[in-house]
Amino acid sequence: MELRGKVISGFGWTAVEKLSSALFQIVVSIIVINHIVPDDTMMVAIVAAIIAVLNTFVDSGFSQTLIRKLEATERDFSSVFFFNMSIALVLYVVLVLLSGPIARLYEVPMLAEICPVMFLLIPINALCIIQQVILYRRFDFRRTSGVNLGSNVAGGLTAVAMAVAGWGVWALVAQRLVTLCVKAAVLWFSTGWRPRIREFSKASISGMYRFSSKLFVTDLINNTYNNLPTLFMGKLFQADLGFYNQAQKLKDTPVVAITNTVNSVGLPALSNLSSEKYTEGLRKLTQMLSFAIWPVMVGLIATANDIFELLIKPIWHPAIPLFQVLCVMGMFSPLAVLFNNSMKARSDGSVIVRIEVAKKLVVTAVLALTIPFGAMTIACGQVAVALFDMCINFGANRCYSGYGWKTFVADVLPVLAVVLLMYMAVWSVDCALLQWSVGARLALKIVVGVVVYIALSWGFNLAQWREVVQTLSKR
Image 1 (tube, rainbow, N blue to C red):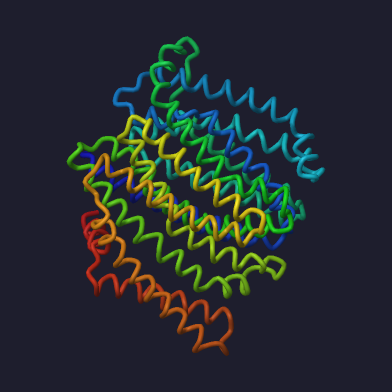
Image 2 (cartoon, rainbow, N blue to C red):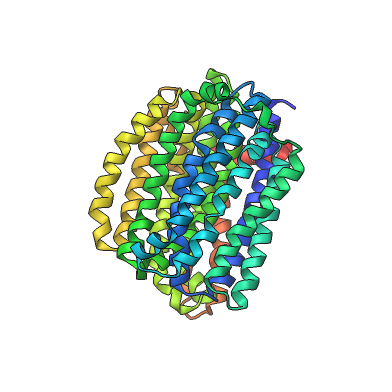
């Protein structure tokens, strides 16, 4: 199958999996959130932030290097696998020993019990890395989608059962563990690849390290800064962290689903495109990502009060304004990730490191200004950071493509106009039908939003709309 056909097929299977998984996760989150308290979310958020940063050391940029490498060998796969597992096991032992000090640092004794269990996610994740790389290199997104969806269902059902049974924070811990364990087991069963210790080669690691080390530094900087608000809030504003984390989780469910759909297929595709087609490919990915994510975020902002009032118990309602602000962030961060990943597909890595260091000087200033003032100020700061991140990453991409600012604005401005008109239509429903029940009003808002967005996209003949129609008709 030619590359375009593989990409379209990949988008189809990945979209089905990601959107199905997102809908399932939303249902799970709503059920679980109504059976736990904000402190439960706060504890898991602290440990998850630590894991997110340290997983960067486990991968060390090798997975993206293997995806990009034109002719990866069995020796490359086995060498990276044993490198990943060695780092993961060492980190796990060290972190278990640090569980007590972490609990004392945050003055949450329960963390001493949670940490050793949740830190198992690090070695389990290491088992999955090469297996996923192999499926990505094969463009086998049908199998990848099935694995991800099945593992998410297993973890979600576990969380629901334990939350309803009154297990509290352990329901959240079990969800993460079961999801990753099932994913690892199915990946190992389905890919057929097995590591061979005799194939381990220091020369293979050294050969890839020049490029992977630059990705490692970049990812480490990004993951550290992305999780700093959580780590600081866990120490300074524990009462707010549960609300902030839950708002972020609800926002991230659709954002991650749509962003991963584009990036998991788009990055391998961009790596295989010739220079003259790279600009066209990046532009189409930008168009489709903005067309997919912006109406979702704006729609959630417009319906947030009704969603929380109808589906989530009042103890969580202080998260509503945080959720709305973070949805604004969700409009920019996926594009920032897309432009960052596209650079990884084309650059030698050094430019990415320089850009990340420069960006983080600005981000440090934003964090220093916002962290002392609480969760809402931090959320507003994250919106500014996401917008800045998107602009800088896009500007840096111009070194590898002819995609300029004028073309970018021309691509996304019509979508922005359409989603703002959609927001006004949904807002008018809210003003006109205050006497309606919450459920009926929410249902009408959703219908109005979808109809208006599709109608305006068709009426304005958006390029993104034409691409969607053409793709669906061809398939």
